[in-house]
Structure formats: structure tokens, C-alpha cells
Image 1: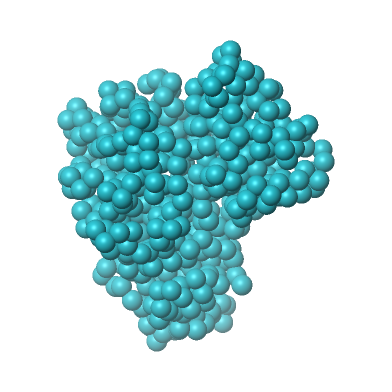
Image 2: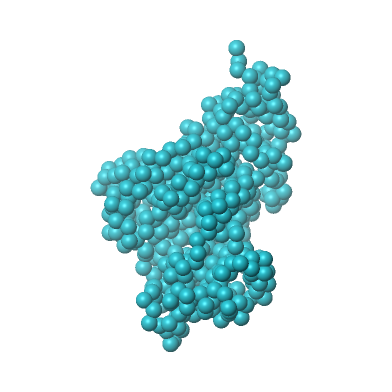
Length: 527
């Protein structure tokens, strides 16, 4: 006798991400697993008076989306601060920061996030807004920040004789300008009072609810440590975390091989929702702040010299140790020099350790030289792409277009070229840098314009976008036999949309939004 389902969704256009059964009408769920995928007639056998039947109204149903690159815990914390993404001018930033200060009178620090480059540039800009409280605001990409004079004084880095000078911009007399890049940000961050555990748990729950509403059921948190993993695990135990979270251990330049035991401890934690098993390196910074490591000089300032965060020898030594421990490796690379050096390191790791099913990754791949693209497939390296990092059109690309220069535009965010060259491609948002809403990323992928006549058309298809957020994303975290497909026996992580996505014109894709999200057979969002 056929076991009756708890939930049946019928009258849907199901894009299954399953090559053996790509399209279906109905799905049945029992407990936390899918027990039937097929047509509306066949699903009747799984339906009883106790079954909840949901009419899909001929709309698209897919596997739950997996965002392979977010900063969930840190992003959740920052959600409690002044949000500056809409501030296009100093005046707009001033109003937002003053409103935050008024609404949070007991706060000793005024903190903002997601501000665009060139809105503020010095401590004097922030002093003119608030001078009697320390102010710290972070750029949208989290690779640059600005602090007012009060904050710099408290951190002990205002004067030229400061002990901490790395990546702190200074004027001709040695006084800090207020702009902090990469490791320079830490000088101020280290003295900002940490938020309470209650604040963190509340913000984390709120952030997870937002992801659920966007149709996201799993994320890869691309920075973390054992303490972060324990926060997620505690939220899972309390029933407050309706997201599956994969947490790599961040390896900083000062780390040694003994420190990798923390990553091993994280890998040994394999909960239903929270798990470890990977490590994360940063090979470089970003184009906007002249910290991306490139093959050729910056177009707008050829005198800038950037060194990678890890030398090739240092990276190869640490990556080899990680690989021997069975850990997956992910590396942040924005510049083409960083991409090339990371591939060189992965090749060296294979020579020393031998080949295995490692599924090592390169994150962002914002610029990649053509001769390096085939190496992804040869080495079995995954390209983990953040679609909304690409400009929809050249005039919306900000300062990056000048840093790269026209000769490099054809290699900027080369999705189609990478799709044709690499074995595996996955997609994510890089929230909090941009929105985590997958539809906004689909819009860019479907509608992106060529940056120059010499550029290749790098647009992707809707099918490729969905696969990059489902089946292919599950493969990245070694979960392709558990999730990422609407398939019998798989976890019931599903999302139902307000439209048939495949009937929408590419320019209208933003009209679609999730109306139901299911995780583990439970409906966690329903409009």
C-alpha cells in the first residue's frame, strides 16, 4: 500500500533540476522527504483526507535555492546598524546616520554599513556629521571603511607614530585620513563593543526569515570559526534556524598548520542543518580599493603595486595541509592575478597530495584571463560566481571600470566563457555586499549588456540560473544526493513562485517572487 503524503503540491510547472526527469506537475512529501514526482493523476495515490493539497496554479516549483556565498552571521549583526546603501550623497548619508543616532540614544558608537564608494572619503566628512561620538561606516563590499576623528583617536591610529599602520591611508604629514582598507579596518573594529548574545540570536533569526521569504533554504557562510558554528548550532537546537548552513573556517595569513585542528573540529560537526568541512582563504581584496591582485597594472594608476595576501609558497603549504585533512578549500579571488596564483597553488597541491574528489573552489572570479579558464576543468576546481557583482551596463559599474580599463572589460565577470570552460559553476549573492534575493541576480544574468564591442555576450539562461542555485550548488557542498533536485528520496526543500518563470520575459523576471518556501518538509514561509 502506498504511504499517504503529508503535503501534495499539484497543478505546477516543476523544474526539477533532475536530468532524468526534468519536468513534472506534482510532488508529494512525507515527513522531510519527497516520495513522488510526476503528474497530477499519479499523485492522487498519495493523497488522503489528512493530506494538505496545495494548488500550484500553473506556477513554477523548484528545489529550494542554495546561496553558495553569503556572510550570514556578520550580516545579521550589521542589520542592527544604519543601512546606507541608498545614500548617494553626503547629505543623504548624514540624514541616515543622524536618524540612527536619534533612534539609538544609548549607543556609544554610530555604525553604518553598505555605503557606496565616493560618498564619503575622509574623517572630516564624518566629523561634519557627528564629531562627539565615534563613527565607523563600512563600504558595501566590506573591504573598505571610514572612521571619524574620534574613532581613530580611540583606536590609537590617528597620529603618524601609531603602532598600527597597515592599510591605513595617511596624508602627507602622516595623519590618518579616515579611510581604512582590508586589515586596516581591524584596528577600529577591535575596539567597538561586541553585540550581546541576545542581539545576535534575534538578528540571526530575523535574517534567516528574510532568506526563507526569498526562497533560500541553504547557504554557505563564507567566513567563520568554531564559535560561529556553535552559534548556528544553538539556534538549530532552539528551533530558531530554518536554514541549512555550511560553515567554512577562515584561514588568516598568521595562521599555522596547528590552527587547522579547529577546522577539523568543525568538519566533525554534521547536523541536519548546520555543518562544517571547509576552509576559506582570501588571496586578494577588491578592485574598488586597489587591493585586487592583477596580472597587469591598474588602468587608472599603473603605479599601484599589489601583493597577494598569501604568497604562492605560503598558500600552497597551508592548502596542502588542508587538503591532506580532507577539507574543502574556497579562495576569494577578484583579480586575475589572484585567480592564476590560486590555480597554481591547487595544481601544486595535486602534485604533492595526489588527486581526490576535493571540489576546491575559487570565489568571485571577477576577472580571469582566457588561458586560465581551461585550468578549472583540468584541476576540477569550481567557479563560485556572484551574479550581481557584474554591472548590468557599463554606466552602472562605478569606479571599477576605470580600475580595469577597456582592454580588460572583455574578461570582467566572464560567466558565459567560464560556463563553457569549467566543469562546475555555482551561484550566490555575497550578501551583505548585495541583496540575497535570487530574482535580482537572475535579472542581471538574463539582461546584462555587453560592456564593449569586443566583449562576449556573457548572459546566462534561466535554466542555467536555476541549476546554479539548486543542483549545481548542492554539488559544491557534497550534498548532490540529498538536495538541490525535486527527486524521490531527496530532502523536501522546495520553493513555489508567484508566476511561471519560463513564461516571463527576461526583463520581467523581477515580477516573480516566492509564495511558499519549504524546508525539511515544513512550510517556513507562505504568503
